[in-house]
Image (cartoon, rainbow, N blue to C red; front, top):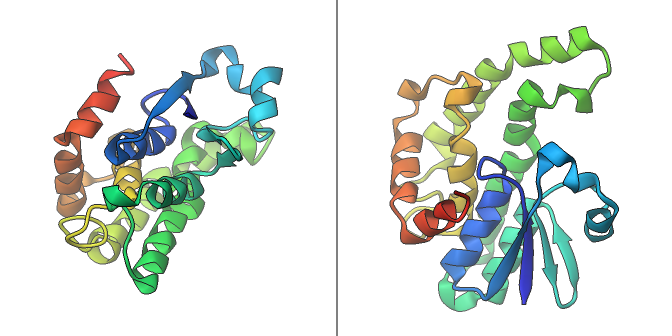
Length: 205
């Protein structure tokens, strides 16, 4: 059975959790309490030496990094139809997920995880200044380019939708101007109405 290591409902591990539920997978979850630094405990470091979530334990080993986990879920549960069928569509979706992982998520992390980039308190504070602008800029590109509508890839719901949904829930806290992002917010609302999303979110309370 698959075992997904997760954090709180506000972490990106929520995307993998939603994808497993959408896929109809047989899985368990192990929740780590970051306030107790459980992600740095020896037991979890054996699972993921990066001390990060998500981490998906399979019968062949552990998979880390959200884009990789989402892709794995889509491949292992093909009947759920969570991946584009053609090579270009697959690459296009992977480009989007990579953008969220490599660009958008780090921009958000500058607000609360500045210690990853500097030990200087002044630098850590300075990193926070551009978070609203960067999130506005990056989500502007999603709003006007990447988000094909009604879902990320168009008519087909894919694992990319779970990933976009989770990161879009950070917008207000990052000081982004959501009035400029009507399509993104509409996507977020439709995601929130999906039974799988509601079931997963309820499990965190």
